[in-house]
Amino acid sequence: MRPVKASAIHLFRVGQQRLRVIAMATRQTARASHNLTSSAQFSSPASGGARTKIKQQFSSQGSEEQADMSAAVAIISSVAGAATVVVAIALIRRCCVVKRKMKKKLKKKEMQRRSMEAQAATSTAVDDVVIEVGPVEKFLNEILSERPMRFRSEQLAACTRNFSTELGSGGFGVVYRGELPNGLAVAVKVLKASVMKKRVEEQFMAEVGTIGRTYHVNLVRLYGFCFDSDTKALVYEFLENGSLDQYLYSGNGDEEGGSKEKKLEWSTLHAIAVGTAKGIRYLHEECQQKIVHYDIKPGNILLNADFTPKVADFGLARLAERENTHMTLTGGRGTPGYAAPELWMAMPTTEKCDVYSFGMVLFEILGRRRNYDAGKAEESREWFPRWVWERYEREELECVLDDAGIGEEDREKAEMMCKVALWCVQFQPAARPTMSSVLRMLKGDMAIVPPVNPFHYVMDSGGSTSSTMWSGTNVSSGGYLTTVGRDSEISVSPAAKSERDDFSKH
Image 1 (cartoon, rainbow, N blue to C red):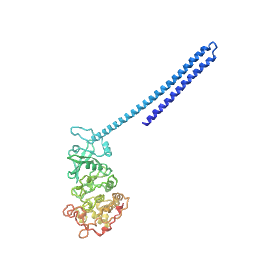
Image 2: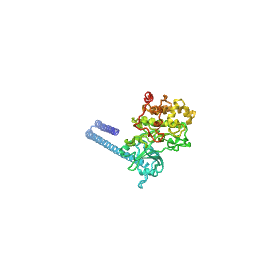
Image 3: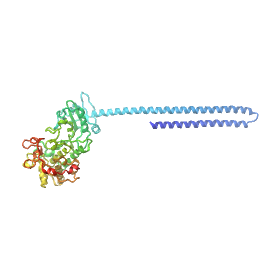
């Protein structure tokens, strides 16, 4: 607005100057005419002197009147010019105000239009109302810049064909495959009513907002949610190659594991381990609000078409009722065989419980088998992590690598992974490395201190390590921790007092 006023004032001043020049020119013309008439009086003959004098008087009077008239015209012109400039300024200012108001209205309408298009991109035909479908790229861009979208239960039922295709189930609920009207494949996790009991909408949406703002290439992306009276669900991106556990347990008689056709090269498995570590590190150290996963396991590591790993189900422990977040058989705080000891003992929990679980995942990647396998002929090999430690302590890691079928070109990385896994499953959380250190060690960017025995804390009556405590499975009954509870006494070996905790400082 200031430049417009300045321009108007400049025009006004230029107009005044021009009017002054015109007035001065008019006066000069009048004076010149007066002088010419006066000179004529002296050059005329005596007989005509009287007539000439009369003409001179009339001419002088006329010149004065003409000069006065010119001055009046100049003044009137100046006033008119000034008035014109003032009116022009007022009009320009009015136009600017109107233009600004129109711009605000147009911007508001544009925002409303975009909001309607975003809703249309995730909507279906409900109550005979057909909503236009938007492009997938625009939908994904809006998801990245805005909070997760809210779906209705009818929309989720339509995109999953009444929840007909089940992808899997866990402690929090059942996952179904679906497809949005724009053709985008999604995974819909319908949460169990017991998990969401008493959870109010504001709390749920606050937690979902935190999850939705957490974005990393190695984390499964949250598209939206549903919080209807009959349905509580989360809508995630769909990963084509499923979960990691389908590729780890091939050829070992595990009917729930993968097949030989799904067997991956060990170099690919190592890349999956590194990518998973990046995702967990982001949750612990880089996102705006620290998130502890509590349930790191192969089933929660999903793979896209290029086998890039993405950690799933992060933040779900925050959605559950606080009194229900204690570890149980149905989930909530850890899975038997992967959960850290502090989750079932009277110990404080930190992000180091995720480090422990990740270490257990590394053991399964290393051996391409479940950590506990009662079908092994040798009892000492039933629980894989303990057997790996025994081989490492005897400097016989070659046996582990041979048994896993790891070639010479990958043995150096495999040995590093073995040592990292042993550090991750240390009993004391302070002795476990941070995920940043884990990642650097896996990539070979950090020297690995020789690990100490992770299993010397819990000893049986004969002085040997109890595999029942650490495997999370009772050998005789197949139940979880049926012989060791939260109040059970635990004997601590003298070696525990001198355990090194170098990584806790990194």
